[in-house]
Amino acid sequence: MNIRVYYAGLPVIICTLLLLPHQSPAHESIYSDEASYEAVLSYVYNYDLVAAEKLVDSLIVESPADAKPYFFKTLVRWWYFIGDFNSKPFRTSFIQTAEKAIEVGESQLEARDDNTEALFFLGASYGYLARYYVLIGSWLDAYSSGKKAKRIFSDMIMRNDTLYDAYLGVGIYNYYADKLPTLLRFFSTILGLGGDRQLGLAQLRLAADSGVYSRVEALSMLGYIDVQYEQNFNEAIRIFSKLSDRYRTNPVFRIFLGNSYRESGNYGEAISTLTKSLDDGSVKYASVNQLAGMHAELAFCYMLAKEYAPAVLQYKICDSLAVGDYVKESPWIYYNAGLCEEREHNYAEAEVYYRKVLDCRDYFDYHSNARKSIDRVRSKHGTGH
Image (cartoon, rainbow, N blue to C red; front, side, top):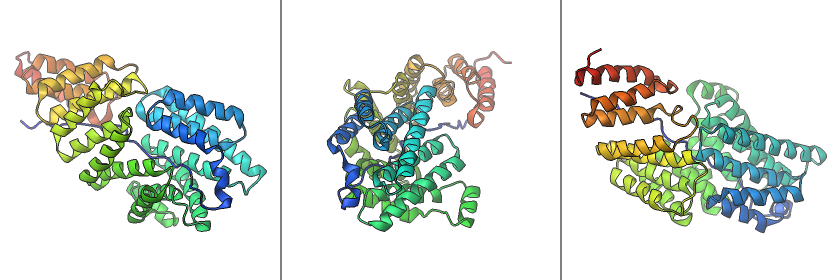
């Protein structure tokens, strides 16, 4: 019998637009209080999000009419969001913060339209908003916000083509605009607003090689693209290994390293990477659901390696840790646990998991597949219908 394996994947890490290096007097204002903002970035990448937000809040108190600290608060809230994609509070707080950053940036530009700092951080905030809409599947909103970010950074590059960090923004736009669903790409081409995959990759590499504050973001973006779209798994492994070694307390880079190994078919290394992360007490998590997600990813790797008993154990741990709607929004967790129990000939246990799928959201036709699986295992353990 052929059993299909269903997996919806983990929230992907979508990269940010950050600061520009010292290139010309016109852009020096972007670096006001540089040490404080470098400290924010250090906290973020080391996943001390509480400390990062506390510092940003103090910077907002000092400069309440300045878009810069609001942008950095958007950055912090983004990292919370990607840590627990299904968290409604994280979604809400991100949207509210991004919209506030845009509001402050636009107010600054209304007061003085040559305010370079306000313009830059306005573009960065629009970029974040675009990535949020990509993750929730709102492509038209993503395209609208991304277009605004691209226009701002393209204009800045026209004035100074050595502003390497600005290439991150246009690179992300160009790559993803070329990856839009077919219908949207058709309309964007008619409007003359389409993307360019190869150009986008080149721009991202330029930011990764020559940017200052954007290097981490550009590297992680390239790693994500390598594993999810380009199937360049060895390069993704190299990138996420580097980031995981440098920021050892950050679970996002570690889970993407495991994901890169898994996608390459190297399940042993994926299992080793994720197990070491879970055993490392220094790793920090934005929520208990992010930790549960790490266990779910490890379970899936065991499942693909045909080690069904440890896979079931990890799915059970995930289920015991998860709170709120995490599992209900992730029917593949119960479905995969059922498949593993079925492979172990534990048909009654498999049926229990398949029935739990029916209490989850019906993504990707999971309810129909669960019902078919229930009929299958009931016939195997002799209970009939």
